[in-house]
Length: 568
Image (cartoon, rainbow, N blue to C red; front, side):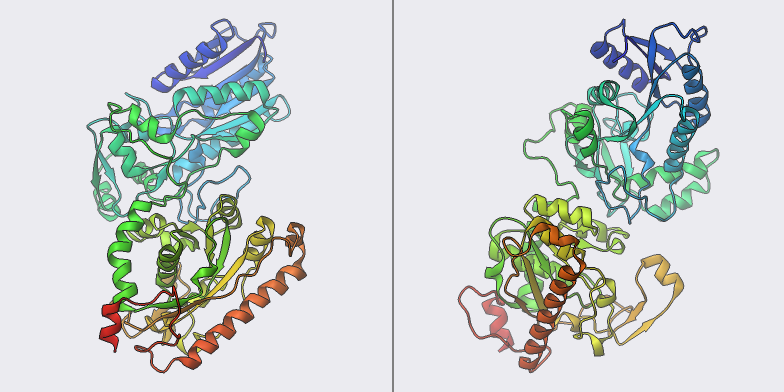
């Protein structure tokens, strides 16, 4: 690290706090604070300062949005003074909150191709301006820390987590958030000064925290306020917040978490504090619970067990009277890929598979889900807290690396919206990434087939309605005996069979994941086995609403005694 470092930061709790934290780590003689712009006379190239830290100033009158013009001018003056390394402190808010956001994104991940939040756009503009000024003249390291809420701060999350504050949130949305402690932010900057040769890095805390828990820890009061009502009220407000006020609310609606793996790997940055600890530090500290860190994607075991004791038990034992075989194939430990057939367009077949596996093994299946399932309030909470994870390869492999059971429906959304007359004819699998994941991680593939789920919402016709497709992100408006008049599923009898696992460890080497022929052959084998199992179960079925198709078996999952008596 060079003998001297400039810190260019505006006044305020974050600028003042970061200055003090860096002084304690670098020493007063190594750090020179320059408020807002480089000090007059700093153009002397012999001043011994070779590095500059630029902490973005807010653009008045929009708190939380940086001023790219100020960044360009300040960094330009620093470069003229002989600075060789620019550390730009940007923000993870460069990632726009969106239902297509995969969560825990890495630096090289593509941004969702949908409407860009204006706050995110302003942070992107900041980074682009800095890159334009620095290009070829010095090294540029861009740090994207997650929010650092502080007592007395005026940014969104400092205000949100203020003790005793009435915090407006969106009902039905309890996303995972990340809060970085001030000392961890300072550590990340020092790591960049010492090790970075340029590039972009996310600085993320040790773990996430759900919004509701963060508010409880900070001592703030949550006030659920519908998004539509917020839009209506904004029309009557004056000033610039009329236009931009709702953009902040989007950061309390969807995933926009980031991964700090690259910073740890290349900069050696390891945060010491969790998001929950940061939130609790803004309260009286007494509310911080003991226990493990929260799940990255919001799975809540307490939430799952509550619904298992109530809704899921009723649907499984009384309403659909599900019988299942082959649950002994679920491994007690280690990763596995559960490959199923999705029908009925609602996610109930995945939810019932979760219940079946939990009953048999005590494990929770982590299904990879379509972004349309987290777009709407309450459905967002239901799917994420039950363990749903946005579908992509990175998320799947991350879960398998942790030894989780990952569930996937490889026909995708096309299969879920099959017309009833074709419901039990499997479509060609759209992508075979699930096979590659299993081969890379050397975990078994376990196919499972259900007969009966297609009858809960039998699709008799499909309406290609552009507005509906844009609003829901479904491929069509399905017409069923009850939907869209009322989303009530029919009480069809379900039959599920978990087939023999297809092992990969010791049979298929990890490098075979890059061989299209091997992958396609294994995918076709799974599809063929599923089709055979479905045809065989349908051949045994005598009635859609009643009757068993499986002989009694030891340890098999079946409806409760009361449900069997009622059925007989």
